[in-house]
Image 1 (tube, rainbow, N blue to C red):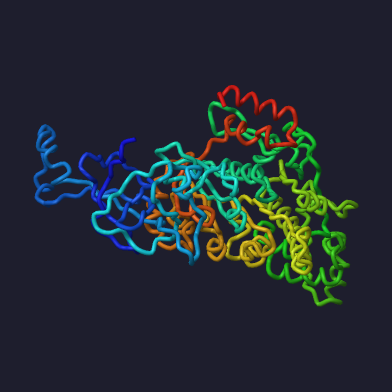
Image 2 (cartoon, one colour; image 1 turned 30 degrees about the vertical axis):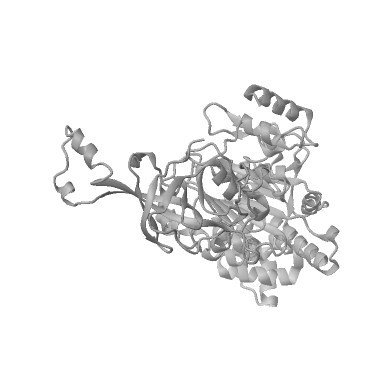
Length: 571
């Protein structure tokens, strides 16, 4: 095997601003792309980092005053690499150092002395470990293109039996899997961001399939546009639809629908109906909907008076009150008649929601909670009830009650210390997240509470949104891992990097992403930021994710489809 040729030589830089490296002779500046993963070999340590900028430079300003003419090719060749050259900006992220007996390690790593860890045995090589960068390589250190072993060293590999790694994609210029550590992913709330049309839903579907496959957590998905549970329209021109999670994991995913007619029209089998009663709606739920229902502060204050008087059935009682009864109530309880009448009038909009009932003989939310406790992943479809009023109301009511149950389970577990009482880790996926988590709503909705609590009660969020700048900055700072597709708005780009040190160089990387199937990943579930070409959600993926050897609960139809896909792809 030939020795790798260095790309560039480090000439200056600092720990805070990053490094500059001059391209070596024979290396074309046009071959290097922002976001490339590189390795810097220092005198004592090996550094891993990202290429964040490319610059053209000259050794003499006079060259720019009188540049060679197009036909003077010989002069251009003479100047190339000496008088004119390229400079790349690098941001070191991690350093590979001899393993210490003390001190915190970021990740368990490949041991180069063990061939089974991904490389040939190196005589005399020491066991190494990755640490955050706390210094810089010396002058004239050489910069190399990362090899497969370098990627495996940093990001691991999907087949690692000791970890729940999931391949989310590969580097822009190499067919090597980039893995997320799903155990670290589900420890905290996370976000998927990108402008409209960049494939956020496909990214979310990939990740959710990985979580189900690796059994890292149980999922509750509020499927606003009916894209996750069953078949959905494909963004690929070669395919009209893509499979939903229920089709890939039929024995492990259950669909609940708030619009049974719509779900049946789409050919979904065995979807369970879901209803919400007026007595399950709290004043806090209406506060979240104040903008959608055009509720004033006075109306919400009088709602509290009504709740205190009538208890859980206050909405049904309010809607049944006559004008005279409202007048009598206000005289007795010091309410405001105009505000209560306005509240009554505006709450009649809830009657238009197909899933709202005055009362319910069956506890549907308890049924969902019981399914989650058994490890069944739940997708809640909205069908034609996907307007913001409907989505926000149902998601908030259901999540608040499930969170209450998880708090009680966690308290029971902490008291008993019995592993059987430990709640299953729950990941709740919401779209249009800024509607729940804007600076006003985040302080009073259950979603803001979950985001701030992190994993305290074994519940985390996966927020999917195209306007991260509209999400409360405190919530953004609590997100553990962020997967970001292309964003154009400066405020949105700034919001993605809330709480991220040294983010200026990464903003340049984010702004240069392609509009499809590229994303910047940074945070808790990856050792360092990385740009990936995301994995395709296609028949090859179906074949890999719905493996008959793994999925004991899959039905014959899905197993047959997976096996056929494998045969067609030669797997």
